[in-house]
Image 1 (cartoon, rainbow, N blue to C red):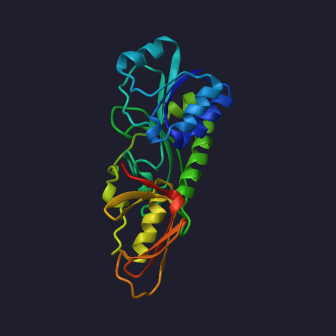
Image 2: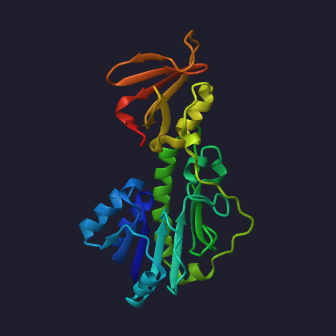
Image 3: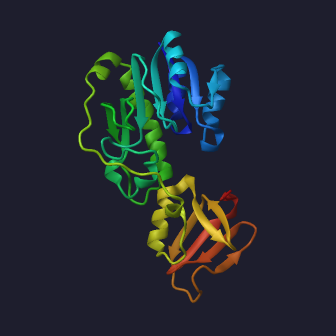
Length: 271
């Protein structure tokens, strides 16, 4: 079977599994490196698979079909593809559809654990709206962060793709239409920003929700993204947002009812 793959690092293990299982990957369309496609790029280079960073138009997709491509697999791809006459077209989505349609559902999952899972659905011109082919739960443990949840989703996605190919025609034919759905909008930068007036509980929730993505800090009117943050409730006499301690490795700032420790190696300037 000839496959065209569209995606980024989020489900790169699916592409790796397809290659190892002997499927012919004709082309890979990936998000730009800014949006996390380095692992995909390495897979393509190692396996001599043509890769592209532009959004293909309908004519280009139809050309792939004329080359014998029978399946499109989309996984965390930035663009909605136009419909063409390919035999199979699926999307891998990191929630239990119809719960949690939308372009960036992962950071919502800590607050909405019943949404957590993986769905494979038919690709349509409605974002995440196609008939559901297969899905599974990914339970979230107490105090777990989105980083470990993402990795569990990453692993479960491979399991679902392997299951799909055990009887592709039957699973595809028996896909179930989605009924009432919920939509999770694009995360705004304000959601990722730490307000030092927040409680420790609220800051820890943000840390758990954004994990490897990082939180935005404003320090001396400069914005930073930090990916390794610890916070604890602790009574102190400092004002809110005061630098309590700093050395070459660590920055500690007072919050409303505690302290926030930022590991400097994880900080980068926000453009």
